[in-house]
Length: 360
Image (cartoon, rainbow, N blue to C red; front, side, top):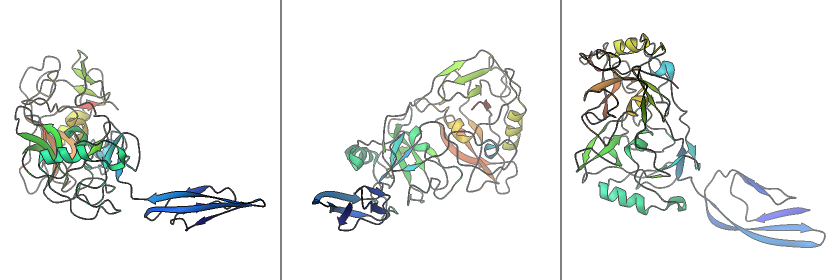
């Protein structure tokens, strides 16, 4: 007929006074505490103990696949903000699906704000830290560069990562990945979250931050189909790519490459008719990065494409300086950096190569 509990439940939790069911969402942390629940009726009472521990979620789940970049503003018709292609950037605190990420960087306190300073590790130390980590009773590992770059939010800067990852350092240091630079055994790939994502090789003994991941390793490279009509299908994403860049014809990719400034690159793709399709566009930075093959170099892309070891434009603007610069990928190794647009006031406008895309 009635239930009581002692000591009181942590804030946010409650007990039904007749069914003894405990429910709710706790709003304060609590160390492991034994609570005694007593059920009472006309025949007397009976008690049982339950231990309740409330802690901050120490990991975050995210979807696996090609995500939206995070850009929502439109800086030119046909750019990333106009299309916003990709899966929603859904990060769930304490979730259990997809990849699981450490919420706090290695060295920080596991509390609501990830207080304290992230520590710097060599690559060997970073691998050892993740391998020995036992948060949540699950196994962890150092992420690949493909996984690590999926956290980058190109609609933000300083730091360019979702705020659910509390207190991510915004200084000039980088985060380690487990991916080595092709053909250079003593370099590994890393990411800066200071103002966006810049990928490059770094000496294995250098110091970098660490955020571990758990879950099945995502496929490092997709598979492609040459459709024989000047297009290539990415079988993992469903995207349809232009096989030959402008100036190289459409089938055999022969001729002289044409270089474009950013606004002209967008206009070229918007006006392209190829393989009976007219809905082509300049790829956003996540789509363009999906073509990088980090196991290759010069060019770092599947040989099914005719590609140059040079810079290719994306339709994504640089969030820290959107009116001046946009992101591009250098397919020599696969590094990513912003470059000046035609209307830039502080730098010389860049002319890069174009590869258009269409699809989901």
